[in-house]
Length: 431
Image 1 (spheres, rainbow, N blue to C red):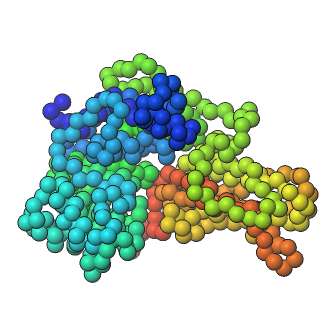
Image 2: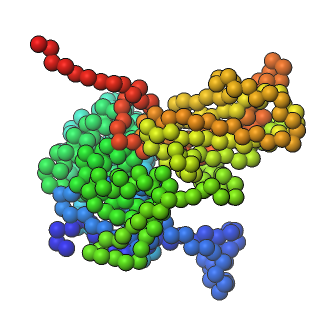
Image 3: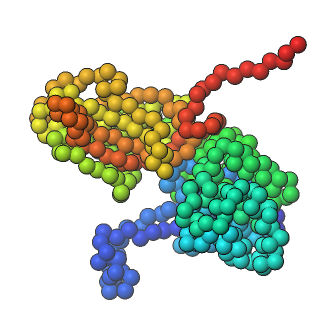
């Protein structure tokens, strides 16, 4: 055990879900003996360890518990049960904004973070040039960080985390915010870290980065560790999960590894609403004049399984079911993908695709089906759908659901920007 710098043993993280605030208050104050909540296991019986000098990647779909276990390891959250042991000074780059005071300048935040990690002002002074050089944000370091773009913010945060000389570096998907050149600089620093015998634990949807930099990968699904092993083996199992071959966890444990056998999901007889399979954005921006209503929607992978995690390069389908509350001639069904910062990446609609619907009568329901190849870069996106049209010459929104669900694109190769040109590349020596 002496070689392990991180040891996670049988960790559970349980949240109490209440039906009302009244029930929450009554339980908190001990005013009832009745169990008036449901238990949600964000993590269940989670166990793994990280050796000194290892680079370990955590992979899994959104909501699998990756960020939760990182927060427990770094002390941001407390586990419900189980034990976590950390031997070494941690520097963590979690979600954007963690550990920074938005009212302070970049320079003030450098000293704030350094002090929180136990460094004196003199020690931070000695590292300041390296931090500023790595961040490369110029005079903005003297401005409040609340004025920064997300790219500038992550440059400074990572510069502090990597140059503060930690023994253990923990990164949670934050590098996806920076541009491709900054990411390359960060990964070069990863390699220097490994060569220096330091430890890295990070979460990424970029399977190429997991495969290239990690010595080991831990695959998590729905709060449970599926398995751990070489990046290639874990990525192969992960890809099966993404196409609906959900692992069935056995209670039998051999050599500390829980077995997992894939089982193909069958959604063909599912009679529930499609949208019940997805986590709906609680802040979805919905509006329209009500002449039509989007009553259901779905995202399906190339095997027909409900999913919001799509492999780059695979074919996927988006369905939108609309109920018409009055007669409408040639309504337009739309689909759009945006970045988390609100930048439109791509989208289309039935008008662009020259798919005329004709007259939709009151009480009728229609399903629009969009099938396409996923060529967006690996990362997180927001999906919007709508039903619109024209009333004479006036454009009308009947019902719009902006940013209704999140979509994760899982990639083994990313290029510059938001979209892959799928170039065929060759290099030949000139005689």
